[in-house]
Every structure is written in C-alpha cells, then in structure tokens.
Image (cartoon, rainbow, N blue to C red):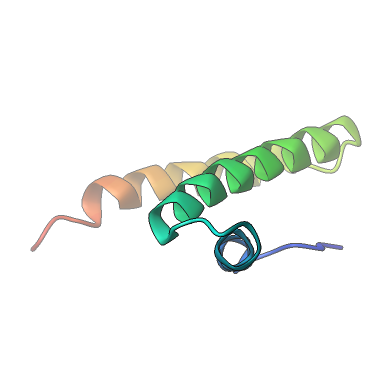
Length: 75
C-alpha cells in the first residue's frame, strides 16, 4: 500500500510556502530534495524486504532515459 504518490511534490510545495514562508522557487527546490530522499528511502526499505521487481524497474528506467533523450526532439 502506498501512502504517498503522485502529487506529493505539490503538497510539499504548498506546505513550504504556507507553513514555512518560503518563496515559490525555494519551496520547489526543497521539495525536489525531499521527494528524492523519500523515494530513495522507499526503495531501500522495499528492497530489504524483497518487494522490488528489479527487471520491471530497470525496463521502466530505460524507457524514462530513452524518452528523456527522444522526447524533446521535434520530428
């Protein structure tokens, strides 16, 4: 079961701006760090528990890399 999912960054930005008084660029930068850290922690947690399907994850990572290179190309 996933507690946090898509849109978590938006909630982090809103919290940084509303509760901590950060500017939008500073809140966004801090959100990137917080999201990255929570994703790595989740990966470690699930990997230790043996709940990661590595082949699917690697295929998805390859698709993200290919899309990152080919996506901006105007055909």
